[in-house]
Length: 294
Image (cartoon, rainbow, N blue to C red; front, side, top):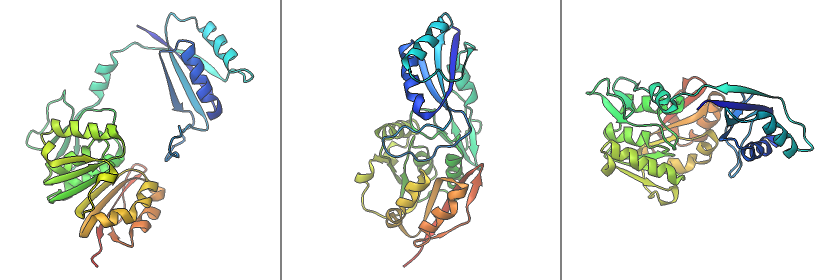
């Protein structure tokens, strides 16, 4: 079935009311998009972040009377006037097929590959991680994940214990397990992430090597490798906590950091780690360091 998009250019204070009016007017879906190429980083807990210029898009069946929809929305947001808007057709496609066609096997370094379930592994002899996009973050397509995978490809994970803190889909935990880790603690405060990690561990036949846990149930232990692909502020807040979890001479790998945040994050870890120079991919950075011996 063909569709129509009603695209409204607005501000954060009107975005939520407009979304409600679009839903009441019969929109099959409502989405928010950045209208000014403005990045959003770390919103306060419980808040829905919106851009200073937000695009609200309602999806309607092509047979919808859009004049009636516009009149209903205008009446619903009184005394505000209807913002700048336009209506455009949306080509009807096999979206699932298009999505599958665009997500192909990806290489990270010399031996590590991410392979979706509908594809053949290009190099069966490589370390192939079977992973499909899902609800939890982490498919390897984002530079922060790619940077961590590249570190694992280069250094391996031949350790008795590894921590993947902020595991998301479990991609780093699975990679570590397949690259030699005997056991990986996959830690996340999102129950959906823990479910995704368990599912991906099962797909990759490493269930016995990965324990998915909430942060408050991670044992008080030291490991030779801790991976954390989260965001700059949580990384800084957790620096001392992470240091307690890394054994002397062990390594820490940090990502989710923008280039302009790298120095500040590295300074937070320097009391406990000898930090290597940052590694860049697009506007993102990976930091890694070795735990100082006491």
